[in-house]
Image (cartoon, rainbow, N blue to C red; front, side, top):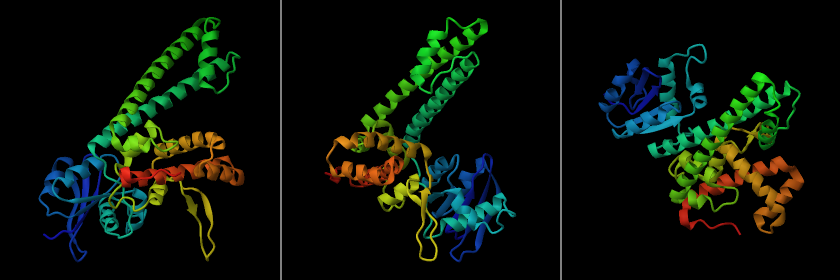
Length: 340
């Protein structure tokens, strides 16, 4: 059985496999493969190109398949959908596997970098920390909402909510005192847990040579540096051919609506990893605040851009430029020269 390309539709327990030969004709069609039989099936096949959608468990399966000598490519689901023959009406696991098999062989297809176990471990820390931050924000808003029922209205500042809630705690009647006290106790525990995870991230960035190199850039701290390294590794290979592709992958480039020779650029695409994009924009905002007191070329450029186009456009443009410099720095390593 000569198979050159395989498409696998991932699931929890039942997978669909579609393989084609050199002529493009289907040679292997398995609409239902149990989870325990998938590795055995792939291990018995000669080395070939395997395509999968980038979803839960995709990176694990990619690492396992690569052990058998296969070349594994991951794609965003939205890039696979146009190759489904039945469109929305004919969607099923077998049709999805056939579409994946067709899409992975396209020369201009864009792929998702396969992450290592170490990268996944670092991303676990980032995801857990962000979840705690979201939980803390929700808890603060809950405290503000409950106190507003008693006529105690507080601003959006988190530190102000902590101080004012503690001041009014003794004056709260009955069960109100109990509830607000418990919420403040939970808030204190979340602050401690987030500080602990900040320490973990700082340690990860300190121990990684690539992250330490990235932190030399303005607006890139331990959290952003370790998140970039954990997401794209060294950025080499066919994942990104240039820094602009990485910037576009993060979603910091404008969307195009061009036709008839007229170029129309809209807002940023907001594609890719929203967490990584928010970190880059936050770092750019901090750089923008300090740029007015500096005389280097980058600071002068972003200040002039802010005067012409406004604060937010300048911040996003600076974040895109930082993303491109991060990719180049990962590519060149010590050979990268900081802009004057």
